[in-house]
Length: 230
Image (cartoon, rainbow, N blue to C red; front, side):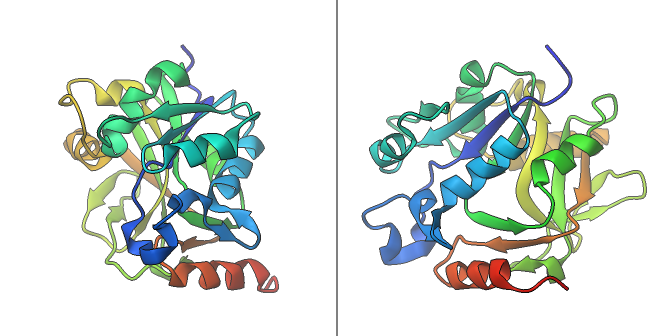
């Protein structure tokens, strides 16, 4: 298989508990921002990156996700009976992705700027990396109140505990999941195995990004999209 990412995994299985009543009867990826479902914002990015295959995982209200995607060239990886978290969900979808190098993208964010997936592809160096994470300085991360996640070295290697925020977009080799436990696990635990080897790298997104994992993020994202160019 190619060392170039040609498949995209969109994470859409979560319960969306931070959204409160907004996700009582629908999954978070179907919440609308600027008249478009969050899932469709993510699908536009996958289409813009010319992905050969797109897979969406689903668990909470999976039938609504399936109905929304009906007729589109998108495969659905249903997680049942249990939700598998990001790492387990990605591993369960590998047969549908059919790729050794994969883009993954969270669906609870909106972007303003260059396509994050094509930006990652341009920075990808498979000889030096097993995963490449797209990060942002806090000033460019709208609606995100948490601490930073990573620091970036001059050679692009990441370490834990710095001020950069992980955006939810990455490239990762399928082989990075080898040896992980069965069932549910987070991609964070995969990254922790790559860190001491120097195989976890990052790059900086030059635009803006808005976290829509909480109700206030909807209006913040719409304001970001409507703001005039500077």
